[in-house]
Length: 108
Image (cartoon, rainbow, N blue to C red; front, side, top):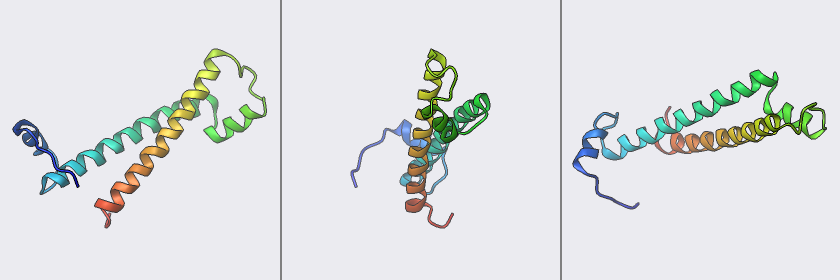
């Protein structure tokens, strides 16, 4: 595992986080940040689900069947692209959190 030096100021800031070692503090910080990123994705996804009254998988099926009346409008195309992006990002953060929790929090 690579090592690196931290400034005194960074070490002092890390003391704001839980953990009895610097590594555990950094892991908790990364875990918290990944959880926050996941929540941000979920919040954006909920906006699209509310707007269209369905989950993305259902929207995508209807989209691919050509049953979206304004499919080629700028707004609808942009919504599709953004929604799909948030779904992919959500999977990324879920995977990262799973990896973190398996490796560093096996008993949780």
